[in-house]
View 1 (cartoon, helix red, strand yellow):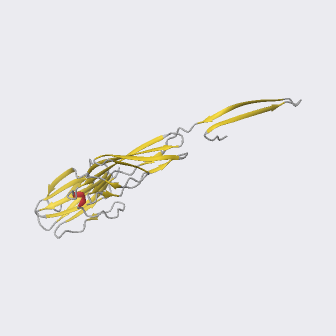
View 2 (cartoon, one colour):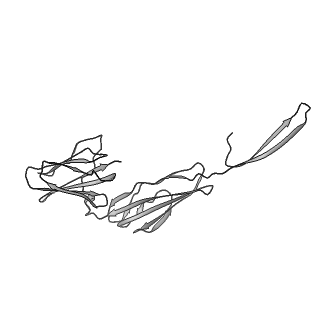
Length: 226
């Protein structure tokens, strides 16, 4: 038998062959102790814009009963608060943390957080070529800068990236791998035409490969999976 949240009274009546009846009763109390389920958006890395206003994916919430309040507080380089699942709006340059708190009708609460990092437009991630549609294990060649091109595969990968730099000149190429916060993760240098391995020790996420040869520069975005 299923019981709703709250107190239910169960009454039993027994009648014998002579018609004598006897009753007894007891109560069943069902409490809701299940907190709301929250799915916060993934960490966001954004390039600075003049008005410092950004769109953040909304938090997703659900509960087995009714949700009565959803609030958020933003700390770090940005200080503001609000209600609802959407915390889009003002974010200052640097790292901010959004903390959502959700309460259901029986007092159960859940929290989750998302980090928002706003970087300067000079950051390598703000100047990389757009990420192309990802298919299973493609070999992706970045649109060519005259005299310099990059071929990277597989993309995405769960292990490492193979990277080949093509150039008609023999001048040394310098290859740098940055995370989405602009931190240098890995760097190598060598001859064009060789194949280099990158990202074998990198965590899952999006990365930018920057290749320079003299005054020429080329960039590509890559994705590392779990």
